[in-house]
Amino acid sequence: MADYKITCCSTADISADHLKKLGCAYGKYHYIIDGRDYSDDLYSTITPAEFYAKIDAGAMPTTSQVTPEELCEVFEPILSAGFDILHIEFSSGLSGGWQSALAAQAAMAKKYPDRKIYVVDSLAASSGYGLLVDKTAELKAGGMGIDELKKWIEDNRLRLKHWFFATNLAHFKRGGRVSGPAAAIGTMLKICPVMDVNSEGKLIVRRKAVGRKKALNDLFGCMCEQAEGGMNYSGKCYICHSMMDAEANQLKAMVEGAFPNLDGEVEINPIGTVIGSHTGPGTVALFFFGKDNRTL
Image (cartoon, rainbow, N blue to C red):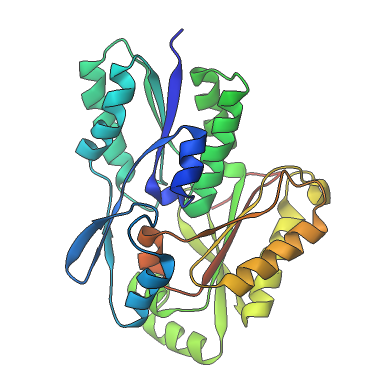
């Protein structure tokens, strides 16, 4: 049986060093800002502060998915070295990258007909996607084979909880998540929409909180209610944010203080350039494995 490699994409919003430690090669999505197209290189060539400063100054970035050709460039050296591939792709409910991954799979299958090339829809986003990649790498390191691991992802991906809140509604208005009047009223009243990623991998507003403190408490409450094992949760927990360092660290302290059996410290990551192009600054997100599947 051939050994295999796990691959993913940059929208997993964990660091390049983290992915290197996991042994995961990744495809790069793109963002377009000030008329130039850039690869999402996990902040290797721009810092989060520089990126969000451009948005604060009026830039309106757009994004594009990884192409089949770019994913083939990721897959080719792995396959030519004799490895199979388990590729975990960004949620099909948020991007067309899933179609790019399927096209790359088909192209490489013709060239390497004896290799297994699996493509799995994560139905996950940002550092939640990253947490799923991290967990699969852990299971692989523990000896799980490619077929068993593919099934594990398909059976467990909806247990991965994503909870976000946003304080800057202008970008959610631009993306159609909230209406113009709702964004104006929400900003005036300091309303923060609290969102999750549903069972179709789409971002859904679930409730509204007045003020950042209430929104933080809502995210924390969701983990207390939903975490696998309740307050004895023993998995990993990730937080990501866009220029909300104080709130992210406050949430980390809340989680670490309430969940004594966590697998390591809560990991905090910046929201990447692709997802950050749509959220803008002012978003905080919390990720953990739950006891139940996500719903519509």
